[in-house]
Amino acid sequence: MLVPVIAYYAVFAYGPMYGLLMAFQKSYSPVKGILDGQWIGFDNFKMFFNSYYFERLIKNTLLLSLYSIAIGFPAPIVLALLLNEVRKKWFKSAVQTFSYMPHFISVVVVVGMLKTFSSLDGGLFNVIRGLFDLQPVMFLAEKDFFRPLYILSNIWQGAGWASIIFLAALSGIDPQLYEASRIDGAGRWRQLLHVTLPGILPTIVVMLILRLGAVMNADFQKILLMQTAPTYETSDVISTFVYRSGILEGNYTYSTAIGLFNGLINFGLLLLANAISRKVNSTSLW
Image (cartoon, rainbow, N blue to C red):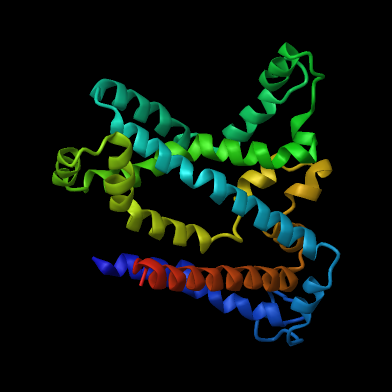
């Protein structure tokens, strides 16, 4: 039963690592292959570190990821806690169904909805602005609106689905703990603070570590679809720059070096977050 799983990771995860050698070469030719390329050491990395775009790419990638964690990570936790307090099963089921549905909508469709809502001609966002006597705005062409639209749409699309794992953790809390807290005179708020949150804390920590391990990986597909030339200042991230350099411009070795740098940063952050968590509260991935 393990053979298909091992084969999948061997072919699609570990096999392609051979291509990382291109990061240390001047150019790549599909005809000659990787080993016949001219080796230049760390020159591609130096070129990226000294490039005009380096600071902007790092800043935008970090800000989008950190804002998403700070605002988006607590959203499914709060939703799960609220649903856990609902006693009417039909209402709870209805809320869960409606909150899960956006997860199954394609990113392409979500971005299309954003473009429709942002339209100057009858778009929902501008209609709302009109109610307050504000001038219409081309939201997707304004750099200051890119991050809020990206983060809030991610929360709308993913919070319901992400809450499933926290609801599962809540269901694993021993009901006797709540009974004992009620006997001691604890109200709903104190039960939340002293029973519910400590009960799901290990799950929260593990999920947070996984998120921190991908802090340099913004949602490439969505950003690329939302991105317009006027918003490059706040929307251009490492993954979109790698796409332009590698796929559009054919600079495979340079883009491979950038991708390797990005992966190493993520790996280091994952190790750091895991070590800190293990030392502080004895909860970690390994």
